[in-house]
Image 1 (cartoon, protein in one colour):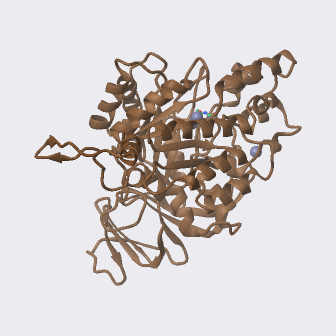
Image 2 (cartoon, protein in one colour):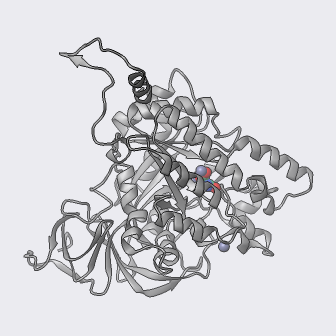
Image 3 (cartoon, helix red, strand yellow):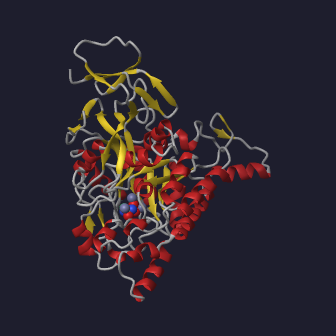
Length: 504
Ligand code: URP
Ligand code: ZN
Ligand code: ZN
Ligand code: ZN
């Protein structure tokens, strides 16, 4: 029967360990986990001997059919989620991005309408807050959290004039995030400096793609990480730095993360498959279109040690997870708009190849083990966005989002064979160990012995509840002493005041 499945003889990998168990799935849910299970007749049996059985990947960062810098990214919610599944990812999280002045709520609805009918796998949403209004922003954020399953808001510290918010705006938005139990996310780059550097480069005749990284070097990223963390700590808001692309920014996240005491608001760093899989150095001497295809922000770095360094930070828990930031434009789109480097639409592929790249650069090199692989590609995203253990693990009661991963097989990444809508792959030619032979999406076999059978509209929107225990601790502290609902006078010490300010 289509709705019952038994996965036998595999190595079951969760973030906390590996077990030899069989998995019985019924109606999209893991119903039993163990040996010698008693199962109903007519159940399809898949033999996973010699393979790892892992939680489906969760890509915390995609931009499907996003209008950015004058172009619309070509992977839509159908093609993007189909490509995700092909690579072993069974849930994505996309960003609702309103223009300045646009309602967050209305733009959220636009995203739901774009996505709901098209997604082949489950998806969640973050909402970008690109402007601040005393009258409406707090209210809209509250409604999104209470009624629409949003628990994370992204703010841009770059894209000046378009999406960027100022420090006081960040402060206010972070404060709302803290008040509603949401997570603040930042695109950490100093947008003011980028504008000035860009003017100077263009005035000096540097107009090609090589100007992009020069206009926003590592320290411009690292400075913004530090500034965002300082602002977040003023209002005790947990902070998630998206797309950490450089050694400097990665070190900054890791350093601040270590400084945090128990009970202080958390700092989380996400890096990207592209930063682990390639560098700007690969563009040296290459044609304009090849270079333009590698442009995203923050940029790939020229330093060839970057991928290994970032992987080590992932291993040490200085960084917590890997996204793709999949935001694909065709070479024609890049060419048409990219009259100078500052106008080349920003974005690269990754939703399909993220799992393979992390495996190849992390597990295959021996830097991380299989459990950490699961943690940084799936479990941590589920915990941070508060959908654990529904997602992110293989446990009785969890959604049957499962990948049977064959570590002995290899594949070579290529735009000729990928399932994405664009005509370039930044990992072109990379040989990867680890092939998803079966990908099970909510109990349905969507990659079957390597054959892709994704179904348009099969995925659902997954609401993400606020107050993730992973970010906010399990119990919420209450600042005031109350007796039968009446606030009581208490003797106040300096420490009390400090504590109160911390919890404000
Ligand atoms: O270059 C990028 N990263 N494009 C997508 C938008 C963003 O800033 O994440
Ligand atoms: Zn960004
Ligand atoms: Zn490359
Ligand atoms: Zn992004």
